[in-house]
Image (cartoon, rainbow, N blue to C red; front, top):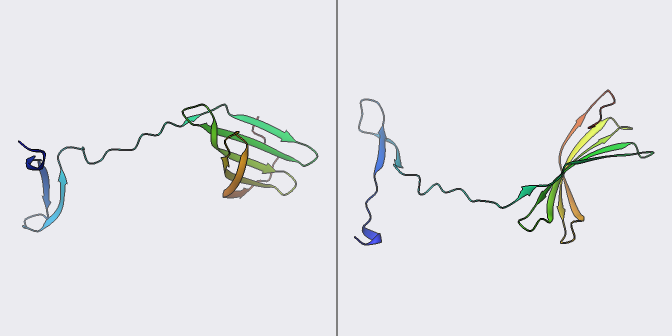
Length: 114
């Protein structure tokens, strides 16, 4: 049998007591392949900076060579009472070169990541 003559089994769902087709989907999940990424999480770190009055939580993600490619930065600004979440893209040396803000929230008490 040639590849073009391959027979697949499909499920056909119809509306109740009718011949109207609602959905058609294959029996096998060969068409639903998920891409595999080779990124892994590095060591999570925290840093408090005074007199600037902020606290950082950094979650780095490394490529297959062990280099940090991007990271999630959660920074608490104590003077403003605001916590901001960023995603950072790193250069070849592992130094952040660009940062995009994802979220922001306010807090009232002195909260730290430690």
